[in-house]
Length: 216
Image (cartoon, rainbow, N blue to C red; front, top):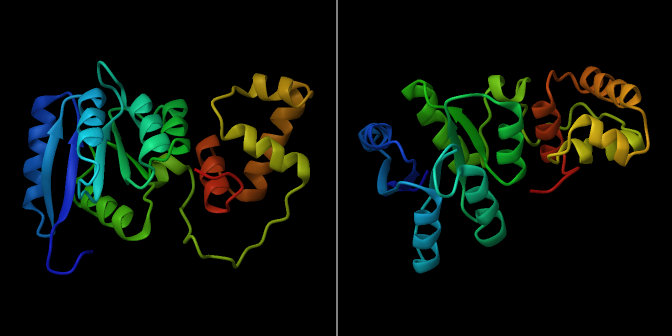
């Protein structure tokens, strides 16, 4: 946390009531203050383009918005302002959307009914450590990024599969890309889930990011 100053937060969410309530909650935390709120990604992007020197510590980005949604906004941030730290906010835990947000640079993903305590912990974690993913999202207990106690050997085709899994491709499309049958791809997936002690594709993506198999 910054010494003797508050962490500056921007909220991007089209639901006014939620956005205002979230601002009140964040401003009630000792070390945080909301410096701006925007109703959709397009307005936020325009603001960032006009204020390149904006001092902000964290963006809270709604996934489902009109005009420019969270995924499209996240892609713009990745291409133009990868220095900005973002936590995605959503009302559901759709695996496909979570993977899109994470692989486009989101440092965390929270459901909107998250408790205030967890919400604050998430903001602190992203600002200080660079990431925050709950067990619900990752399908695994997120280990410390510097935990090297368990080295896992991966075969070349497993690494190729993991890289494909970190894209928006379906498993069927991955099978076609690797010139393998869907059944063989299912085998790769289950083998990796067992080897890496994870339960979901999201867990696989997080493993790949933390171990620099893919870069975001």
